[in-house]
Length: 260
Image (cartoon, rainbow, N blue to C red; front, side):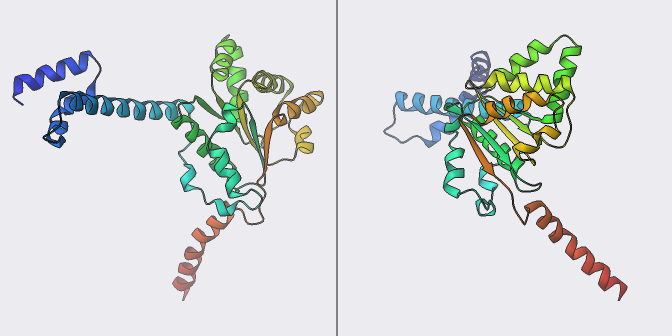
């Protein structure tokens, strides 16, 4: 293709927002001799569609604000002692989101709760769903800050627009009365309307240690566990501790050899 034609093609591709059409030379070279104009056009539109789908997935993952990227394929499903592989794969289909069900993960630290939450969130993003990720502390602080800035309604609408809300680490902090009420409202507003994933180190009976509003606890647990998957994520050999031990071991051996 000569320079003028290429420049014209680039110009129209930009105006029409069809960037993959700039690659038409590649498509032409790959076409069979029997291919016609319709085959060429179909292949170009397919490439544009695939490109847009991939871009949408990346934007959805970015908008979710995950702390890091962990996929379901990276999970060692054998490590979950109390959850069957088939059950986890069923959750990975994200049907629970379409059914407006919740997931509550309860287990000691380092057992893969955050990894699984993020992996399910990324699966949802790839299926065209809107996801938002918060630690419980960050969500509480964001709600308080938004209220102070008179933008609480806007933030609540942003959160409610997500098909899946992930609240991680619901156990590390104690929430005052104001924070408790704001968190309760966010979760309560989603009941039977959109899905929530919550991960925590504490059994439900221990949630009274987190919230200042004690009378709210039973209602909060009731809303989270209704139409919900409750996963026992406890493990006697947490992955995080085991991994740390593997990392530390060579250093000890090096120190021992060094002293010799």
